[in-house]
Image 1 (tube, one colour):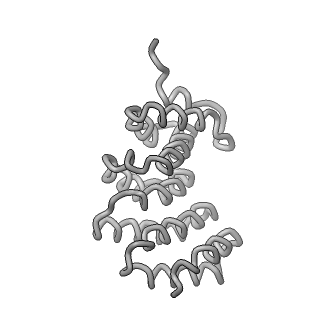
Image 2 (cartoon, rainbow, N blue to C red):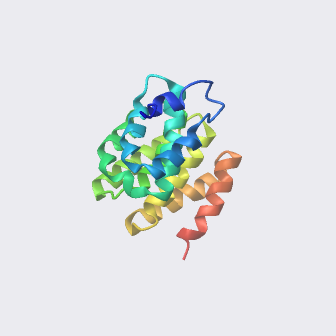
Amino acid sequence: MAQPPLSAILQGGDRRSLGHANRVVTLILSQPKRFAELLECLWSDDPVVRMRAADAAEKVSLQRPELLHPFKAELLGLAGEAIQQELRWHLALMIPRLPLTRTERQTALALFKQYLRDRGSIVKTHALQGLADLARNEPALQAEVAGILDHAARTGTPAMKARARKLLPQFRS
């Protein structure tokens, strides 16, 4: 029996609901060959499908980050062009899970610093997490990211302040 396209499972309703995104996570974890199909949904014309696909892809990549690796260039490109806040906040969490070159890491760092100027608090908060994740194993970035976190802990939104305070101890000797 043919399985429905992932885009069909993810559609319907509005962006206030995850719909069947968690069902898609379970499906992809049992059928990882369909991960590419899920990522294609990040470019859907439907913002609901894009949002739910980003949520599902981020959750899958938390358990299976290697599934992201073949799509590194596409994800970095999307992170640079995405304007939908849900895409941005999920990409900020996924991109640090990729095996990045120094140049790609610098590109991600610049993108996440741009995300700190987003109007959405969740995007800004996830950008802080993404910056910390990028710098965790990269000594050359740690001082800069610690400065960003310190600034956010003092001047950010309440969510940014809380996240920055949680992340800062990782960067203090």
